[in-house]
Amino acid sequence: MSADNLLPVLLDFPSEGVARLRLNRPQATNALSLELQALLSQHFSELGSDPAVRCIVLTGGDKVFAAGGDITSMAGVGAIDIYQRHTERVWAPIQHCPKPVIAAVCGYAYGGGCELAMLADIIVAGRGAKFCQPEIRIGIMPGIGGTQRLVRAVGKAKAMSMALTGRPISAEEAWVAGLVSELVDDAEVQERALEMARDIAGMPPLAAEQIKEVIIAGLDASLETGLALERKANALLFASRDQKEGMQAFIDKRKPRFEGR
Image (cartoon, rainbow, N blue to C red; front, side, top):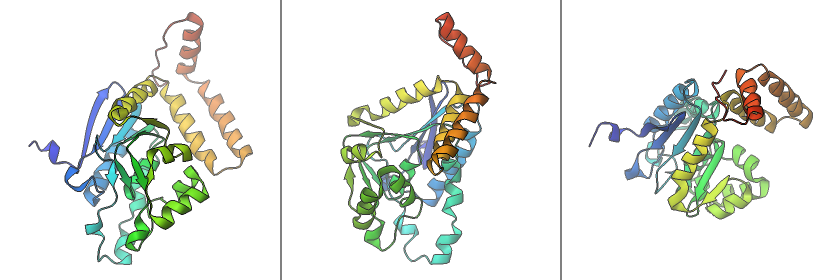
């Protein structure tokens, strides 16, 4: 077995402009160990500032996305120890990544795995996937955004039901509720996520980053504030070479060549 296969997160570049991160703890159903979280954070910090990367695919592979946090590392740990782990700092590079992020979800996305998937901008899920916030069943609650992002994604009624019962929901339920962006057959998840990533990577990256920034910033803003952000971001893009290239290519009926400038 190669040294790379022992790493809890694997990185590759399957297409131009596309980076893929794969959680790699199959023996532990990709439980989010402290080592895995730290490496994932490091990768997102580096990829987020790499101009050659235009879209990131996050996956756990064909069998499972991530079946929650690493319970063995939390059992018996005190409140101060948990607080001093500062998971919000570890997860910040994922939360604030300027590049579009696509989660390719097969199998379980439970607990921290569900919270991790919700940090993505787009979730492509297989029909056999399941989403769950089961923390209440072991005497705790979601602690990495599971109460806050979930309610924003699916609304109060569904979020309350999931968090208070710990009951998993199917990919179909998640799609109907608005948690999942696209639902495909399990065997098609990885390729569909890569296909979408290649499509986004071919778009002007400045426009993609501005769209992501404005949508996220506008989520908790008033409509008028969100519209103001949108107008200014749109105007800013008219200073880019890509805007000139995109419009001229449209007029010339040719494929544009976007450079991210």
